[in-house]
Length: 365
Image 1 (cartoon, rainbow, N blue to C red):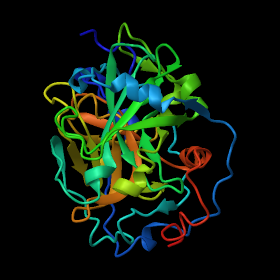
Image 2: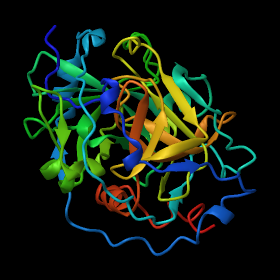
Image 3: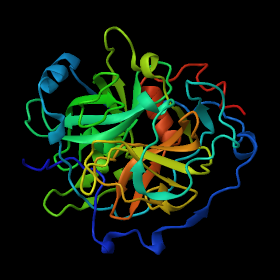
Image 4: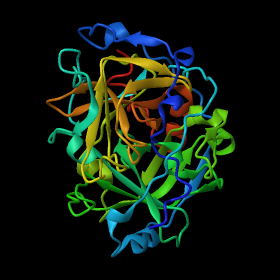
């Protein structure tokens, strides 16, 4: 089948493309405090909403028709490089929304999953069961080829929001939105197991900085532009049988600039040696700074993991945590993500995901 020529997913490159020491600063994981309070300042007033955003609308019924009777095992990905340049971390807000399965995750519970870079199978059970899944999209409304990413249901006032990477909804070589965006929570075996059904996008939201300044070249696989510092997106899903996805599967917490302790990264790596048929993870108690502003960890997960969630305060018993980033780029031994901060919050609010009470339970600790 023709390789999907436009989607910029997690890539596997030669060692010469590794992030060098000149653009990284090793960060030792902070000792775990007894609660969130010592590692977070009191939440400030919510950032001012800006009108600048890029919104793309979809027809859920047309998307459902596109995927009807289609084999979900034929999705493809494209290998690319890591952008040059430097960008600061997005400004912290201190705001967070809790996972929907219970209370704040303390340091004694949110211990993560240690250090693992091999893309091991993600443990089953808990809130993760339906809140993480595989994302599908096509280059055009009628394209016969399609590609895959990963995504996470996050706690929102609208109860219908996914977090993923901007390059999972926007083509960075042809400068056009992807179409037929579908989410399958808890998917296994190329869609043969879809315990929560299929959900179709109604709208997606990215920062205009990404739309206008993130580029890729399909011929040589290079990527460029300062827009890669904004490689995150939110998707609003249409109801399924009259129900919103958060009311069916729950939602993970989300944070806009809190200190990360251990990190757990979840996704569906699809390029060899993986096959995309199961959810995998990498985890880390120490990491380097990603040159575009965010995190870089040792991880061998491959293309298809793009858009997957990066969580701090991961509670293995609840399988819940706070999403602080989504997978952006990588190579054959490492993975990178842009931290969510003030600019990401502004996009989240523009997507209709914020209410007065959403951050009250956790953001002011």
